Image 1 (cartoon, helix red, strand yellow):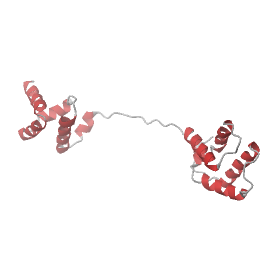
Image 2 (cartoon, one colour; image 1 turned 120 degrees about the horizontal axis):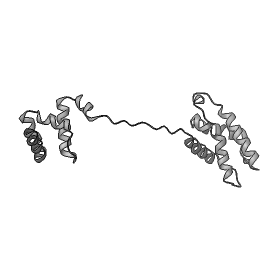
Image 3 (cartoon, rainbow, N blue to C red; image 1 turned 60 degrees about the vertical axis):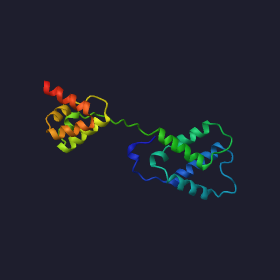
Image 4 (cartoon, rainbow, N blue to C red; image 1 turned 135 degrees about the vertical axis):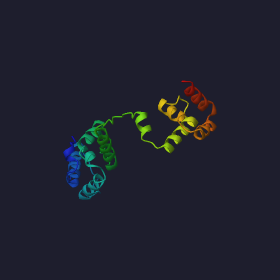
Length: 169
């Protein structure tokens, strides 16, 4: 099994390739074709293993178990072995849940400049069907008449109601 301390260690891919081939020779009668040179096959398999992460390569034994559990009569090809090693490597990766925290609107609103706030109010009026937050409403009411007029042009009905409501209270 993969452990975090193995992540930065160096791996002997040739040795792992040799172990994979030895295991295949034990399980299958003809693990490698007679026309293929065994050292060349080990060298090629090692070059393919170098393309994977250490986390995936360490899972080679489990991948071969999965392949042999399928019960095929013929030994797997190198691409089949590599694909199964990747699958097992992905399945054994830890699932890290990222905690999501909502940022209170008021705290982000208070850090903005007036021009940023104006842009936020414009966007809210144009695109958001929900009621405007109270902190935004207060800001709109406290603005000069020219800013209020500009906002009325975007959504006359909503801004007029906001200003009237606030003037009555």
